Every structure is written in C-alpha cells, then in structure tokens.
Image 1 (tube, rainbow, N blue to C red):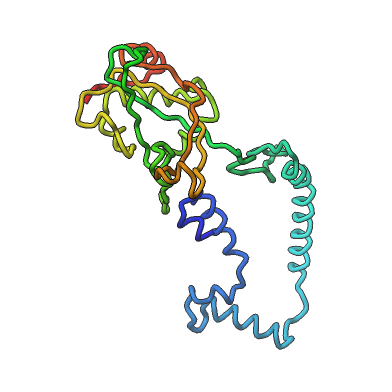
Image 2: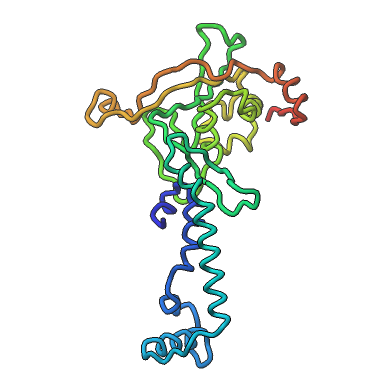
Length: 270
C-alpha cells in the first residue's frame, strides 16, 4: 500500500486501507507509540500479557460472556448480509458502489468494476483559423500534465499527487461529451485563454498569443509502442489511431447561450 501511495495510484484508497488495518496489530507491537512509564497504557498491556503467559488469568466475568455473545451475533449477521455482496463480487456483471439493505450495514465499493483492455483518449485542439472546416486550418494540441497526448512523451510518474483534470478526461473518453458537459465548459475557458485554466495544463499552444478562434475534441485509441519496434525507434512511446470527433468545433460566441442556460459565468479573454 505504501508503494502504491508513492506511485500516486489511487493514493486515497490506499490510505483508507492502511488506517483501519492498524487495529489489526497486536497492542505490544504498537507500544513504541506510547509512554512506558508506570501506570501507562503500554505498561498495563505488558502486565496483562505477562499474566496470560503465566496462566494467572482468572475466570471470565459475566460481562465478558455477554460481550462475546454480542460479538458472535454481530459477526454472524455480517456474514449473512455479506452473501449477496460476495455473489456480486464473483459475478461477471459486477455492480459497484451499491448497498444491499436499508441500514447500509454492508455495501460494495470499488474504483473499477472492470478494467478495459484499450485506452481511449480525448485530445483537445485549437486553431486560429476563422473557418474550422477549412482543410488548410492548422489545429494545435493542448497537452495535459500526465494524460497521454504527445506520442513522444513518456508516461509520467505521479508521486503522490492526483491530477484530477487528467483523471476526469480519462473517464470522459468512455462516454460522450453530452454526458460530460464540463468538458465544453473547459473548452470555453481555453477559448478565452484563461490563465487559471492554463495552469492545469502542461502545454498551451496559444500561451503568449491571441486565443484560438475554435476548439474541438478528437477521439483517439492509444496503446504502447513495442520496444525495438518502428515507432519506438522514432522515440514514440505511444501509437494512436483516430476514432473520430469527440465534440465538434466550438467558439465563444456560439457558447454564450450554452453557458447562460447553465448559469455558468461567461469566459473572459485574458
């Protein structure tokens, strides 16, 4: 888990796993975190363990039997309620983030129900051309901090920061832009060349220049190049194939009604 945190791969999930697991350690193994003076918690634990080792433990009190009965009953209840959870876990049509009872005692949770074998990516491009349909229009690509884009850029190591925009772009590629309206909001800010938005990117081709007149999204399928292969010899880490447009070319005048209908502040050019 610590190695996964260092890699930046879903760090928050690893922390959520580590913290509860501390309760599984023996009290003595955690003694270094507590004082060892007379009357301290560590001294009390060591005394109990020494008495148990010497066989000096007296008969259990009435309250101990009640506590054990409650523990066994709760454990049996959890096992019973977990049956549909386990069945869901081994199912080929696994459902994520679901509760199976009104009290939400047991649930299914996970970051992924399944792992795709292919990686599709959205590449956002801008142009200074007045006509986005002009075959001679030059489209320049925006580069994100860790998301695949430039074919000659090696995969980055995130440690331990989580690039949320890159993360959202990955998930948006699984769906349509209509299901991810925020990407049109992002495009509006890129059309305005907003500095705050540009700070979330690794490369803005229009930085220090006039903002683009049009922005569009292209859909690509990415895969790694083979070591020693033709693409690798060209210093390319990735091979990509265009799947088609992700969202059509948009400009600021055309987005005014879109922004207004959603009560979004209209982007202002820097």
